[in-house]
Amino acid sequence: MHWQEKEEIDAHAKWIIERFQHHSAIELYDMGKVKYCMGNIAEKPENKSVVGRMDKVLNAWMTSC
Image (tube, rainbow, N blue to C red; front, side, top):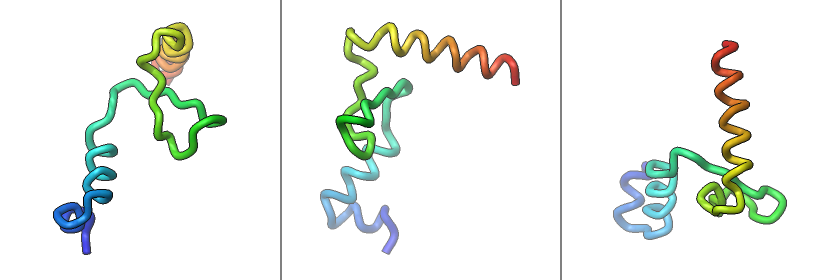
């Protein structure tokens, strides 16, 4: 059975599909506290500087490529 078929009869399968098909453009996770990337903390105000710093590093790397 494919995931798309399973989502019709299994609420957990539907949740998994929705989570991975429709996610935030910016994601940040505290891997030491939450397993399996289940709690995106990028939107929290206290993480704004971390997201900004990581964005600058990513853009610099993309430019260098």
